[in-house]
Image: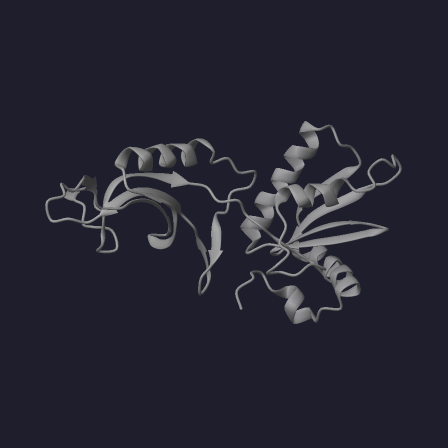
Length: 219
């Protein structure tokens, strides 16, 4: 008999986080994962044939046996029903929501092997801010967040505009909490402003305008 703690995303199996031979050990590891589940910027969207919301959960499960007593859970209609073996092979003993840290593609870095966390982006944000005469702008342009000044251009490509806006607000909160001055948080660029920012992106990246105009990372 095997017990596991598994991770799912939108109801699909992702991986096994822990496996053992006793229920008690499995619960102990499940509770440890829950207690240690702290993220700085939660992943809320994924690119799966389109940009869709992401929901992650962890489960304590055991190998299914016919004598297992299933849980009573509410279905989508709110009705109490007996839970079927998950993925047809495991009996669910317990579950909980789970947070995953988001990572970002920053222009100039590999978008698969060198993705950045919000902590990395904060480092880019405060770079050179010991110069009191220096001012940086932070602005959302479609799904892109720009950090730029006369001598700096950094661009974070987010999955969608909502993610870019979430990142903008999180960076602004961090800057205010740490009393970092000379940062202008411009919010989301309107159509008129976008034209100027498209030129800045083109100048620094050499991207064609079709690529610059895109609003999501969906192929």
